[in-house]
Length: 341
Ligand code: NAD
Ligand code: ZN
Image 1 (cartoon, protein in one colour):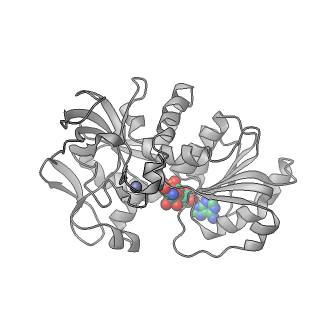
Image 2 (tube, protein in one colour):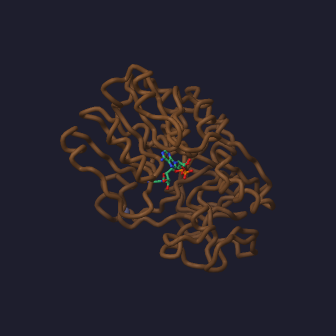
Image 3 (spheres, helix red, strand yellow):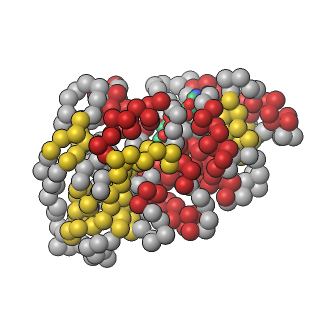
């Protein structure tokens, strides 16, 4: 089968021929129809320090996808050949304490599809049936292909009560933008989003942010005054991983505020802990998606009218994958979807 793989320990990604994966008793084989390029794939493409330490070579990459089940392991129940599916890319152990308590997203033995086991940038993917999510008819393959990052957005957006609250999102990457759409849809008052990239801020505005702030030239505090927000934000979703954004959010959050941290900083990051203490802040780290509560919420949010379609800004044939990676790297895009059919 055709697959996009990390073949060499150097920047780049290559189209290759590899064997169709075999499935075990509890697995299914998925014919991949659409995939999307994630920030993680960009890191693997660029071969940064994290990738070098994490990804064995050769490795088929990719973990954002939608497809169709074409084979079932002998023990698989509840699915049929022909079912349209996406799936959770975190493969959990099932025997650690958190797994046994149903908190699979906190499994200490997690493996990642397309990171340290063969991924979805391929004609076929073998996946434990446990990880599947069956797609309702009204959710297109394109949209289902971005359920993994949409799940990051939903998991973070729903970490704290935002109904009637003033919410700051730092970072208008695809995940921050989708979080803005969710937060607005479920009834926050001000949904303010920051970035340094005008293309992405414009997309965030189109998708539900009530105010965008380019922090490279605008003052967030002036914007707050203009919005009559004198006390500060009630909830902050940190979705940039940029230390200066974290520092800024600690300044503008109200006393008793809640912070959900999704963005991954480049390394160790110092913060002013006195702000956390004297403001009585709550900080929660967010990893992945809750299995599978976040997945059900994603489908329901779309079924209740949330329109995510503008976030997919580019659709390409998989043969043009190099161009796809270049577009993602340029910052002038939302999600880039590759067609495998
Ligand atoms: P992204 O890199 O596309 O988005 C980050 C955005 O932050 C960019 O648009 C960038 O321009 C912006 N930014 C840069 N400087 C800024 C500043 N000073 N203030 C505000 N914004 C600034 O990433 P993404 O794919 O949208 O993901 C968002 C973050 O979440 C990334 O850090 C990613 O690594 C992380 N992530 C975490 C998990 C998890 O499970 N915790 C999963 C997926 C992604
Ligand atoms: Zn586990």
